[in-house]
Length: 316
Image (cartoon, rainbow, N blue to C red; front, side, top):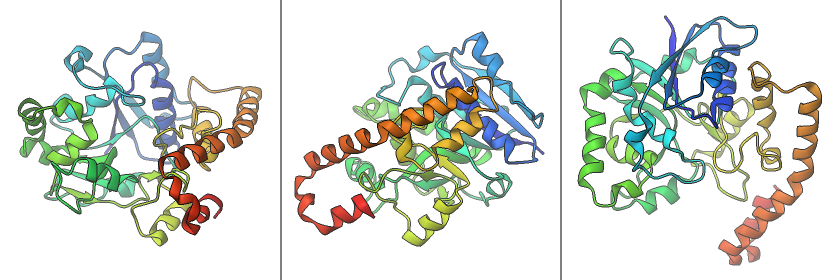
């Protein structure tokens, strides 16, 4: 039985999707069926995505979609038009695929995913992990989400497509977009949280470790659980600005070299000298980036400078 994994890169993120795919294959003896939702990938990028050095336990399937169907959907920063493609996964994949793992392209797999696919999905549409900024998003969308709601991150979703189709989730999403004023001002993750209320199960932080420096945010999971996951994360999600390919920001993330390791298995691999120069530049930029983040945080909440809690977050 193959493990079905779905990604939705555009041409800018094809390289990072390839690293994600390579990391999954390299950590498992299972066979992978990768489903690439293709809204206009170049011929060259399609060819490169099908190459993983030294491994043959995978197959790449391209599922074409018309990007113009999403022209009215909002884009901002790392949220591109391709981000919205996941809303249609259940209808894009064959009916024979009843479970799949959706992964954002800024994700690296660091363990065998077989156990994750064994998650009990009876009666739910997806297994997910809470978002590291869950309080911020939950408060921002209080109009649609009840008080105390545990807002999840949709960058890693084990989807029960059989239940998804049975519950008509895709139709519910379209109805929400059609009937809710200013719905297109919301991002896909929020819409999924609204529509999937009561239809998910939490698989914990291990399979979606969203690392950000302590000065920026905190985990929504108990500290002991987070620390255990951080020692040996199964899936690392490079959320926000801290992408492993952005010099300076990446060096604040202790897992960024895992991305470089995975990239070395793809058609976009760096030479040894290129990698060495990139790592050096990343370390050189690290201090400047931290200073920038420090100042930005003080501008947002200047009173924090008088709290011991703030300084503990900076230096501990």
